[in-house]
View 1 (spheres, rainbow, N blue to C red):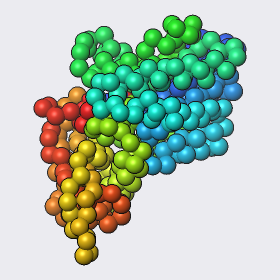
View 2: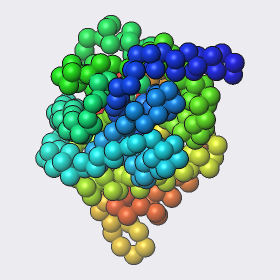
View 3: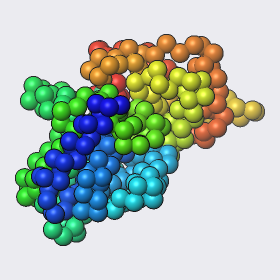
Length: 319
Ligand code: XMP
């Protein structure tokens, strides 16, 4: 893509000009935006960039390993893998209110990020994968989940608190342009085409109290569900798909025995920007096969439901 090639060269020139020989910290979430920003900045300034990946213990199966392998081993980008799952899960113990969950995670995220950033001597800049829609939305929204999205996603308030200046090389781009730039930078399609994943992670897909036990079950069920979607060639037609584990156990029967396990809900939606969404019209055959696989392969779930709520009135996430 000639246009993106030119954009990339210009962006690299501007990053070099802005940063000089100072050090830059970039928070990696595993999502497309921060990944593209990190690779672009690394092309511009090499090892003056250090990435910090905060693992809050609320990631999907294999996700932390994927991120670490790709950035540290494949791209050779200096990366701190901050495994803080004990801290996050400890503080979330007994918390079931959705807003309290979000606030707890947001607060810890900032503390943890700052702790690791303090270890990087001479850091003067904080890099963020802010997109053009984020720039507009952060001004126009006042209430509802969007505020939380932006304040968490963009680690709001952190740069000032840490005395860091912002580097935001994606500020003029829309999502599809970021994907094109990612391709230009050689990021694998499997990474570029990934469904969005919320900052609070699996916490908001586990209504009620979060326990390690439930998170483990949720991770396994989600992996089977996504595998089904990929196998049927549906992944790219869907904006977002995930499993939510419900805070209720129900009775079932398996073999000669009675089971008493968790129920889960499958969610899949189509959307252009996440602001509105329609539930995805899976075939009954697909749903039946997926339910059977989840119940057979995931210990701890004996009932599968499909969420057919569109947004509005539902939200995409369960909390
Ligand atoms: P809702 O549930 O509000 O989600 O319909 C809309 C889109 O935003 C994502 N989302 C978040 N992303 N931090 C994020 O980075 C958050 O706190 C957050 N909450 C929701 C959600 O996954 C969907 O794509």
